[in-house]
Length: 218
Image 1 (cartoon, rainbow, N blue to C red):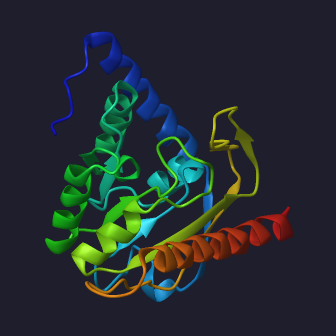
Image 2: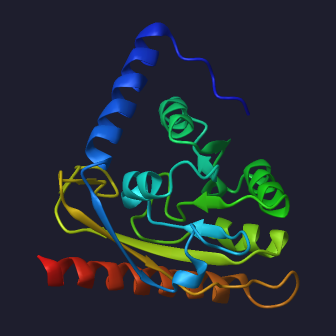
């Protein structure tokens, strides 16, 4: 699905939002932890990168400019997010695997098979917060590519009163990025529920690792 062309006012608001993201982002410092062999900058092979929805701004900034394919809701709000993502060097894939959309799953699978880095928020777009949905398992199984969980924690941030407690880092703070071990889901065999539980555990583990690092520096 193409990104719908925004009207003039929306284009101005999007340009302002992009400017604010860059103005804030350039003040941030990053610390990377965990399995750095699989971190997105130096990955030898593409994978399905999974982050919690609340850390979308932080993950998007840190991995900007790499042409990553990202799943973004096909809603009107999603249009705005997709436009901002494009300005940061991302390629939006519109839809939602959490709603059982085969078309959305197929787009992500195609991106991975073509060799692109691809990102997903397993608890998006509406939650529950930090609760992985089955879509990630289906994408990994059909694409033959692994899932790599990324835990993200800012040392200082504001939290929105949204379902996910969306994180906005405070200027000049450090953000911790913890990369997990790859999770391979075979084309055939194995229980989807078991692999989903494994993804949930790995996301919880790397998130805790990033949060511990943030607390120790606070």
